[in-house]
Length: 640
Image (tube, rainbow, N blue to C red; front, side):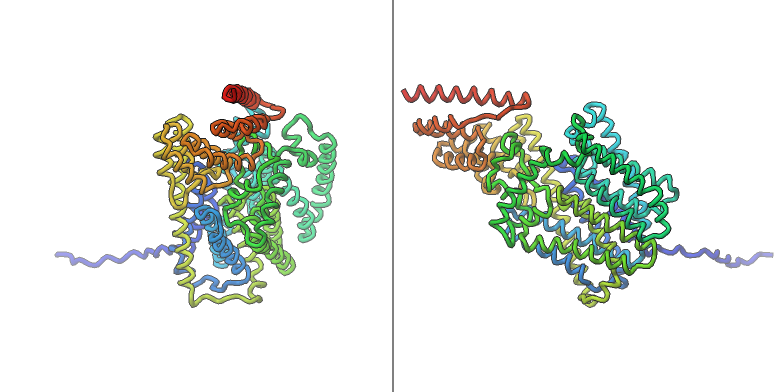
């Protein structure tokens, strides 16, 4: 008998539920974890522009992925702190219109957009699911701690094997992840803060103490006094404040931590008395030696000159990203490395002072208001939060923000993308803990225009992607041009420098216009018409660089335009009164005009490097004296 086909019973397979927070996790991993390790070796600065591009692209993709969820669940009310952050961004954008360099002003301003975007996204994520944010931040902190520390340990081991732990040698080695040892130490401090933030969630105490110990040792070894100050301030506040907030912690504080702190204080006093002479690490651990150091004297000089600049641009400043161009305009007399070693400062090494210079008193007050309001909300949250974990979180986040304030007094975290991410997360978390306060205060509801808000944010991030791409590709060609120039490959230098120039990339890493590289190459190729044209363009883009003036004047002398060359050389020597190369060229220029008294006058004003400490300095002196004697002989012969 033939059997009938019967339908098979369907297997009861439960549908796989899609994780509604998966895209949030991905975005937070990209922003906080991956971004801090991104680099592009072929760039002139392999961290800054690549991370600007990566973060902009990550935020743009993240916005597209979570836009529907944001529309339905986000807090579509811009409260007071949101508006303060947007006001800070608007101030930066407005300054583009009076900035000296449009390309630099745009780049600096759009970094502030990244600060706001990360802040806003993290705040929305915390409102959506704080546990998810904590989980991702905790995992990313673990990963970054061990990856960054592992890389630095290898570099420090190589440095120690070759030079010991000398401070200057460390600059050349501890640079694989953030550019130099100071920026690496800054980042380690924030990793330390986030490790403490999640200390109660470590699977084992051993892991926590290992991370904290390793980070602390590396911070000490990297010898960055700024981070020493931030770390000391954090320790002095954290333990007493935690003992006050947590009754269960008081016995540990009084029996163990306080006696250990007193002992550490006595050791510090002994160190101050000894001053640690003859040992780089001991000297830098001693706060009493800082005011005597070369770096302290150099900073005081830069800050003094910046104050002079600020007096002329009191309310609105010189425009975003323009400090590095305007700084030499007050002349650089008194800055040894600037005058004798052609060192170019592109940062004031004090974010408050640099912002005061670029955005005036209005911008400085607005910037400081961000931190003042954040600390105010932290104090409010400490008083209102009842949970032990929440109060501990606010305490640690506040200490992280205080450390940021200390670091930016001596360093430049506002320039670095990874530091802006850290700041944004700290601000977003503090704003989240003070949500009840902000809910009581006036705000602007924008639910009806949520689509417009997200559209404008997406356009801003898309613009960032374009800017970042042009910066990265421009820097790749710039690096190639500099390498070609170092090996005297002049045709390649011209080709690569020309390819490097675009709307958003006009300078190399020390604020020298890219046309300068072309001018140098044309000069050696003895093509004076394009040489003069290139130097003239470079001079327009940076009219206070005495090196550019000197090179431009040299080309003009060779081209036969002596009067214009003399005017440029005299201005170059006004900016750097110890510029012997410029004085020598002035003597030559006046000799060409047969004004021999003036030629002799400028020749006699050459004073070489005083008390040369290195063989290179002594060699330069010998060469300058030899050229001075040859010029003197030629002038005397032509006077007969």
